[in-house]
Length: 266
Image (cartoon, rainbow, N blue to C red):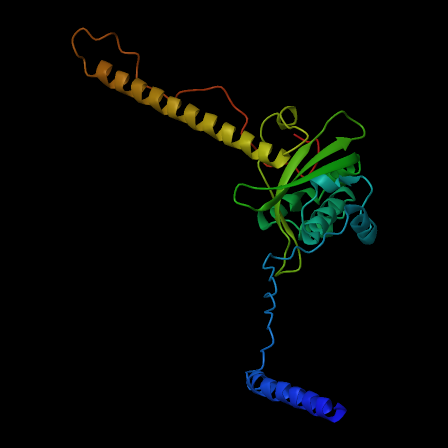
């Protein structure tokens, strides 16, 4: 009896195994599951131009031995080391009366004017009287770097102001400075900020007024000339001749002149 049960159990298990065989074969014959490929994100490329860090003005002054009378605040300084070094060296050579160095950094036209001052001690005496030079950088209307210098004199209450445009001299190795015209009473109109922009605005205003005055003078001259021609023709009912029209005299006006190399001079 027991043997029959065992044989029955064996048959039952054997049948179950045989029944599962096709399923195992079907499952084993399937394709292997492909691994999931995760694409990596493309690296972000930063095409923003890299701006070279600038050296603080205080460090540049120590490095190049700049006279302590020169004041260039960080907020007023140019954005590159080359421009900062150029203006610091230029005004250092000016206020220390280093004529050879100063002359080498002047434009050709300014150098010719300066050569006449080297024959006297006027330049040296004046610059050594400077108590402080406040500098403020900016750019001209044609995008040249520019700097306004306001000087405090020790022996007088004068505050001479100058504006210079310059090239840092990347190709020549020596910066070149060119003096700009000075507006009338510029110190009464300059503010503590945007001094270069204000300077050029004042020059534009002066030029506009000068052109308007020239047009007025030209119109007046033509009217007087026509009046003289009519009187000379002897036309009836014409008023007595006042003689030929002569040149029209107008009050003198001070032209906008370039800054002097001698601060405080007129």
